[in-house]
Length: 260
Ligand SMILES: [Mn+2]
Image: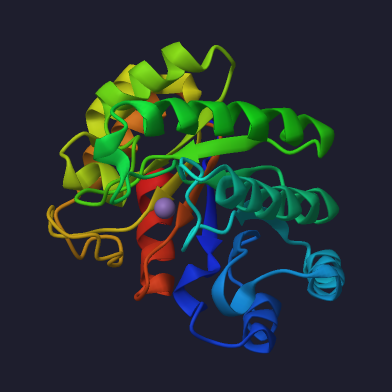
């Protein structure tokens, strides 16, 4: 049986400067790293060169989490949306330079003016994803949409919304299953059984089933045994990337046992 690869998102140290991220990478205990192009770790050409060097000396492979904190690809102002899409394009160009095997991004979200234009943000979200997919071909980056958590206004959060989204998009796109997020709407099993091979990347962290706490594996209500069984059943071959804020090493060890 193929062993599932464990990865580590550097989200847990986003509060630290970029230099400290680099130091951590030099002592990483896993070989797949998810970089976050946001906050203090926002990428630029020089940082990309530094990271590339580290990846070669430490034999690391990267995935990239696109900027997300204030980006809304469903924004109703064309000017604002164009700005967001250009920012995501820049991130794709870095993903290309870093040989990232994939880039994760978030769906758009409803805003204070959405109710004036029923259905328009859903349509805009789809059009933006179509534009991003076009760009991703140019940069040879595999773009993956992530399921985002309740109770926020993201347009694509649950299995029903993803089904509709996939049907209406009219193009192939894969999914990053975030198990912490799907635990909040109680749909982890449903996501795995419904979408199976469409799941190309997985984020793991734990919570109390209500809040997006990003706890370490086993510190919340996620049924990890069931999760491990279910992803083995679909013969999942991607990376399972730890995205907890704390208990990172412990989470790596727990997952290693679960997924062996
Ligand atoms: Mn995530």
